[in-house]
Length: 99
Image 1 (cartoon, rainbow, N blue to C red):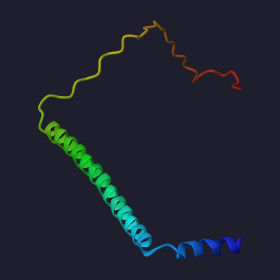
Image 2 (cartoon, helix red, strand yellow):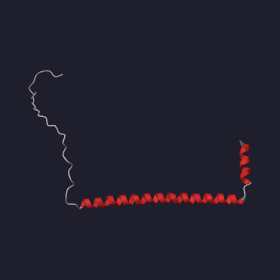
Image 3 (tube, rainbow, N blue to C red):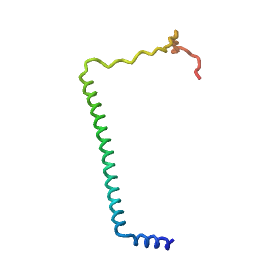
Image 4 (cartoon, rainbow, N blue to C red):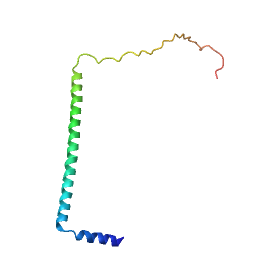
């Protein structure tokens, strides 16, 4: 295992300076593109959030000054009416034992 690492470092150390410079420039360009890409994604998300909150605030402010009440939901159509009779029993004078 240690021999393999030594060989890898030997191969890397024998590379010409042009390859090292190209690798360093490629790494710098990759980092810059990654940062810019993240910034663009974050910027688009921030603009979308501001627009969404702006439309919500506009609707909220307009609803504050609107004279008409909001529309009521329609009545349910699946109602069933059942005729029931109730009988009230007064048990204050009842002397039967309760369980």
